[in-house]
Image (cartoon, rainbow, N blue to C red; front, side, top):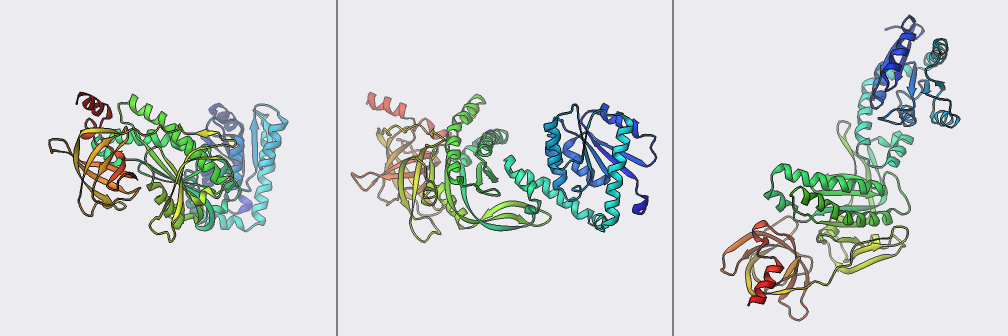
Amino acid sequence: MSSLTEHKITVLLIDDQAMIGEAVRRMLADESDIIFYYCSDPTEAVRVACEVKPTVILQDLVMPQLDGLTLVRFFRANPATRNIPMIVLSSKEEPRIKSEAFGYGANDYMVKLPDKLEVLARIRYHSRAYINLLQRDEAYNALQLSQKKLEKTNEFIRKTFGRYLSDEIVEGLLEKPDGLNLGGEKKRLTIMMTDLRGFTAIGETLKPEKVVAIINNFLGIMTGIIHKYQGTIDEFIGDAILAIFGAPVSYPDDSERAIACAIEMQLAMKTVNQINREAGLPDVHMGIGLNTGEVVVGNIGSELRAKYGVVGRHVNLTSRVESYTVGGQIMISEFTRNDIDIELRIDSEMTVEPKGVKQPIKIYEIGGIGGRHQLYLPIKEPEVFVPLPGPFDLQFRVLEGKDTGGNQNMGQLVELSDCGGIITTTTALKPLQNLKVTLFNQDHEPVTNELYCKVTGIDNSTQDRYFLNFTSIPAEAESLLQTDSVKQKTIEG
């Protein structure tokens, strides 16, 4: 290996125009003390720089894949390229752009394409200064010895950037690259969980490519909205989303933005289902739960595989809050409600006793948010129930989490609405319990054993009648549970 005194000048040019790359190559071709490298893809520039170890970087400021000033910041944020001299190139002399470039860490500025003598003079001036710095600083040798570790770190940075959907989050990490280290911190966050109601049952009846089409359509639209409200997506779990508001970057209005985001997401379900119908796919409906509390958040995992994640009891509580929703609903915990001071339209509230929580808590169904947001869901029309000409027998099990075990109970479906019905049963049920139902027609023939419902209330007039919301209706039961056909039969009767 050559010593530093014998180190040749190494130039790396980043420019998306091949003719500029060729012009600079020709300028330097006869200079025996200069090694030239060219990179046309700015998204690969940091990786290439780590490989070739340039003594000076020439970089265009206008490139379609990545803004040139942002790339300057990437170079200055990366330990391997932080001190390499940078000469930025622009098509014209603009004081404002020049000022910004110097502010972000550029060392020099040239209007392209400059004279050959000027290019050589500036390259040699900055390269020799950098080589002298390396000679004085033993960190250069340490940098070579730790190259493999740096490559892993750079890969980790690239993967980590992919986890964030907000430019502000990326900017924050560029300002504090040590924030990518493994480890966590306690922070107060607002956590969002969403789920498509009955999607598992829908997925079992569709071809795999149609299932993926529905999920990609849904996640694509929802990702954009979460990004808009500066949320961080922690995880996609099939058709479910786990997002956080308040990390890595915290703001005083994290809870407020989370609620506004949830409302806009529910409003966007109209677009999701319009796209589904145009593709011949079924409508889907989403429930959203929000909760606020102190959790541990940070980079979790190992050097080989890691993710930015969140853990703690408030994550589990958010899952419980979301489980109380039906399609189209947004439920927030009392902790989120108490965390904001802005007008909310609260459509209902109730006290629940989630598993793993010592004391009962209140949850609120949110229909709108005022202030600067002014976002509101349509006000629900009173649910109209139509008596069946004759009851449908049914059997059901009460679901506990994902478990479909438990006793088989008997009952009858006696009335229908557009999204649910009323059953009678001697089994005592509680609001918000989930049921898996086997439904029989009036000839006492089984129609389906995959009808999923949520208990939404108890008829005050009698203790054996319960209101249900159908969270998943299999295709074989759809015609039987159409309120229009029930009305027609009632009229005919």
